[in-house]
Amino acid sequence: MLMRTDPFRELDRLTQQFLGTNGTWSRPAPMPLDACRVGDEYVICFDLPGVDPEAIDIDVERNMLTVKAERRPRHQGEDVKWELSERPLGVFSRQVMLSDTLDPAGISADYDAGVLTLKIPVAEKAKPRKIAISHGGGRKQIQA
Image (cartoon, rainbow, N blue to C red; front, side, top):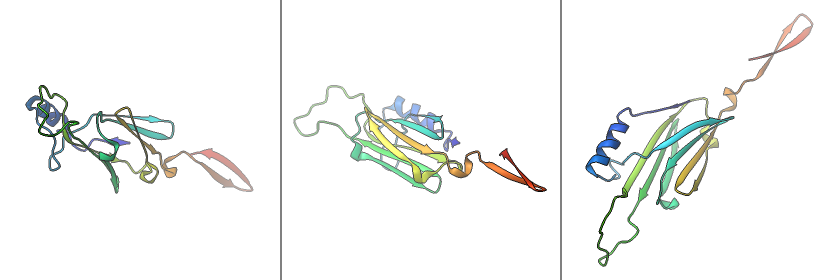
């Protein structure tokens, strides 16, 4: 139901981690995610610790789901002298192709404890349904 769109995304992530580069708006860093199906909906969880919920943008165009977020340093100014900075800053982005069996209009989002959780319902047209068969004078229900 969910398809990866960029097979080189993991290589980019490892390179950025090794080189210590931060994401920019023109070249955002990837964010880790987990995806699973729970009943009649897909659940996707994105790790975004330290990101202000106002700095998260979720967009769906056709069947492409895009999540962008920006993590800024907490303390800025002339008085701040950084001793150590290991937490990645900058822009993070992830795109997920949604299949036609999902309903992008029904997506809900929740952000708690640094995890953005999206729930995407399965479209009604993709759910199993019963089809009536008429033969002679009687009707019989079958599972489609």
